[in-house]
Image 1 (cartoon, rainbow, N blue to C red):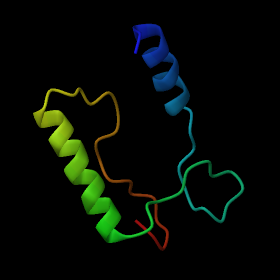
Image 2 (image 1 turned 120 degrees about the vertical axis):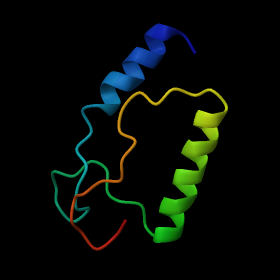
Image 3 (image 1 turned 90 degrees about the horizontal axis):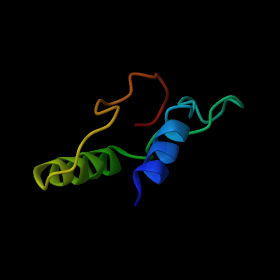
Image 4 (image 1 turned 90 degrees about the vertical axis):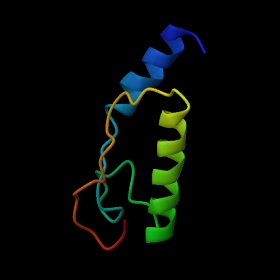
Length: 68
């Protein structure tokens, strides 16, 4: 992937509105279970150990809703 392509993806990602999936303003809701959340954390940890670079985020959302 070229740097230009990566920059475009990163810039678009930074504009996504996280939140309650029941709200019209939400563009990306939560993961659907605690198990999926933990699996995602495992994937991220594995990628970082293999040399990936975390560009943004890296923390579990603190948005309150009835999911993860």
